[in-house]
Image (cartoon, rainbow, N blue to C red; front, top):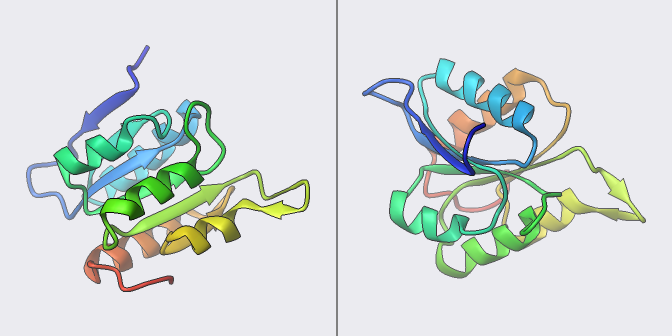
Length: 143
């Protein structure tokens, strides 16, 4: 079984270093595979706990985070990251959609996510956002 944090290198000439945070192993695997096929280096974490320190150490070019996770959710993570880094591009993803009248992805955007995606999303949607946000980094605001 994989640990909470893994570093996966696509190749020595990766286009960007991307941190993917999601508690669902299949989602991590699918995103990691897609991003590595796109030439990116991928780092994964199973929830938001400790990710801010990881960002400070590894300095990724982009973070993709799920919203609904145990220990620390994506909204808390986005807020924590924005407290010390206003330029890291963030893509928030969620399959939770509307729960009790609350759209978590709208909150994620309000808290500083540059882009949002509702699961399930098309692979092309994710890659287009990733490539655009990495190319335009530092990110000035929402996409």
